[in-house]
Image (cartoon, rainbow, N blue to C red; front, side, top):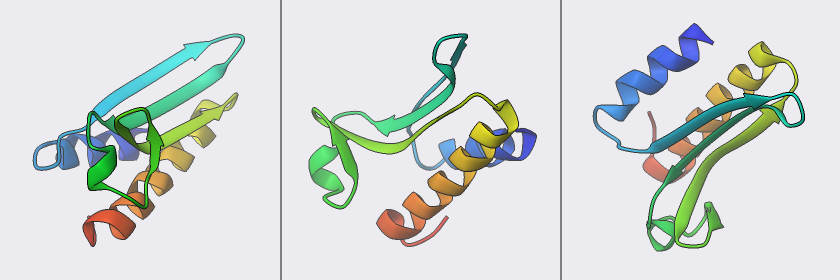
Length: 84
């Protein structure tokens, strides 16, 4: 989790994104990262209305959820931004 949060904090300095991290006993841990209003700017990305979805992970295991989000974020950046 710490590695993901450190990486995310560093990346947010030059690549603004919206980040929602949540937990509840029904839906487990969720990490949702998106660029608001940028769906058309990233045609290969998943979309939700006008937003480009970067990461949407959910898992009952907190460490696994953060690890999957870390990998998903880096893969998205490689595919859509040419690297991280």
